[in-house]
Image 1 (tube, rainbow, N blue to C red):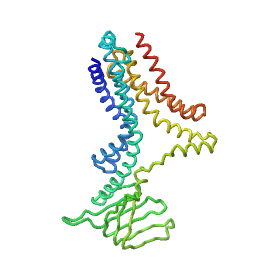
Image 2: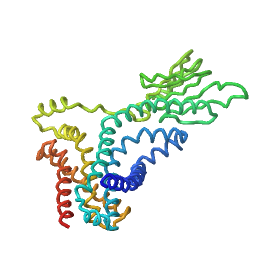
Image 3: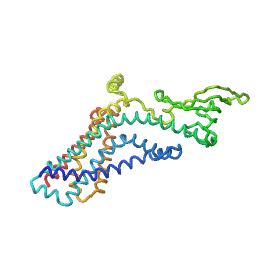
Image 4: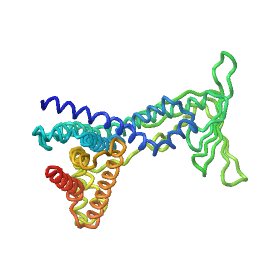
Length: 361
């Protein structure tokens, strides 16, 4: 009987979990929508390239949405079971609330493993993959600018134009206005070109042949002009797409910096708190999943929509506790470890009180 009951409760959890996870991912993605629309329209990138960017961003927002989806699923499932008096039937059959919670704990454990894996491996992979993807996209952008008979701006401050080639003939000749350095604007023309790609150096560019560089110095009475046989024009990917991220200091570096400042450096205190949160935040998924059981039973008839609203309210409270913990750490009232685990401790306390109330009922 218990095996059938476990499968039944797990089935009740899955539907609201996938629905809420999808909705939350869409809501989180709206933050990036303007930048994605700019890539799609302003930069002339195709929809497949934008979808690839979204795929590489997925680990970052799944880390945030998985715990919330787990909580909402638990609330919605047990609210439905309670409103249909199925919880009463289970209790009448001698099944305790804690036994009913067992499949929720198993389900939350899988979500915890997913969250923990994404935070430790998924996000670092996403950072590296985005850099590699940026190399591919910027090269496609430069090729696009060089293959069409219109003025285009593949990167900020650079305008390119290639005359429309004749039928059956390759594109020849290129005009480039390079204003990336406002103090040294350049006009470059060349008879031929081909693409360069150096992923290890995080640069792509164009090799120009048989051309001229025109420069107007700040002194308007002068004019510079240079001819070349071969000229390499390189584009820095890290600045063009903003994919370069600061390296996160490790635990030893953080402790050494804090000891040098006699534990007064608020920035390093926050970094140490983030280090402890690497485990504390995924563990919160377990607690939130279990918390949803008594909340759903108490909030009878809330349904899927009500469960979503309750889940959002609880998560807002959880993030406010995180802010409070960070404030305590930066003001040196709390140790970074205590600040990182303070929200989880509050969740455990609330979960225990609600289970006690439900069990007495």
